[in-house]
Image (cartoon, rainbow, N blue to C red):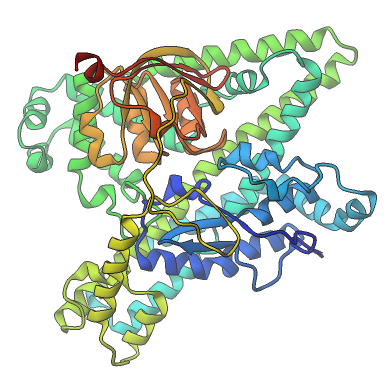
Length: 567
């Protein structure tokens, strides 16, 4: 076994990386507690399954200023030991690499390679069997979700509720985030190495983006395509249109008896466990409030986006053209047949892991939705007993505190909740950095100094070059500000944000990598996208005319905002 941190004696680099993509700015204390327990039981164990041993006390994930951060030393060292450039980790998942990692070599020594051989073999076996492993794990999660979500928890005793939550925690160990994330990175690396030798003079990011667009296997993209189909169904039904034009919070019941309602219910059965910032147990699910889905459908209707076939056909054509172009390059080489076979196999592996990454999250969120349901029932009981003031106060306790409460321990949990709420309010005043190095926390209550630069660079995530007006969206509460044809600019995005992608002219995110949710889904819709654009949110204003070059990863500010010119 190999120790993954034994040669990294530098200060730890803590990064919000793609955690900023999957969690709200300040996840609830219960979510922080869940991640703390997952640190060893889930994350460290997945490294072990790849033959890569980490000390039991390794902090892979840590809460700072009420936000979660990844230990990037582990990621960088893992990449280095497996013979990959540590910068690939940053490029894949986003974030900004620190100088403390510059000492790591992309090509390990002969001694390191020999020491790593058991891990190489074990990891490759895992990757080669990932279809079987993921199918089994995802099936178990789905069956558990279907069974447990139909239980009336009000009939359960406190002990039975605790056992229910313990079962859910065991179910969460079926998650494959680290293994699939590693497989995605490796398959990306192997395909890029092939392309570098074949077409060294081309923009490889752009080539790769075109090769994997329109693959039709991305579950999060299919989720939005289903919503577009709902809009198409609504367009031809007067009863549905009248319901959506009325008070939308009460529209669901008015839709009974329509084909649209049947399709909507099918959507909720398939995707109802998802929602905004769905990795946070505090966040509501689509199934709890169908009106949130109806608002998205109404927006598509207003924008005239009602047929996903045009999107799918266009992206499929781009993909097929890109593959044909690579095959023509291969025909010019010796051993044409072998090179073609190698290319198609590498492309297939990359596409498979991209799809699995989104599918793994889809199933992981099922477990979180089950946990939310159980904790809400406890919150209801504790409120009735006078232990808590409100049902949702349960999200301000930790797992050990909830367990002690269930065992009859006496404590002033109302005070604990109030203190946690005050702490969250204080943390909300901080503009927390995306990177923190070492144990000394920086001063962060400072005004951001606006730069005057006009050109920004990031990672080319989805091809295409367009100009348009920027619309800064800080949270989904501001979705109503977004107008079709504008360029969406955000700190980061999660699956609910992707409902804006089909009507956005382009997407720009301050964080994220080429394997981030924004990048994967934007490619499916053919929406030009640039990610990991450091500082863009501090400079842009609503109405700025900008150019998004999704081929080269460049953002140019063409002119100031409309409001500024009017003044």
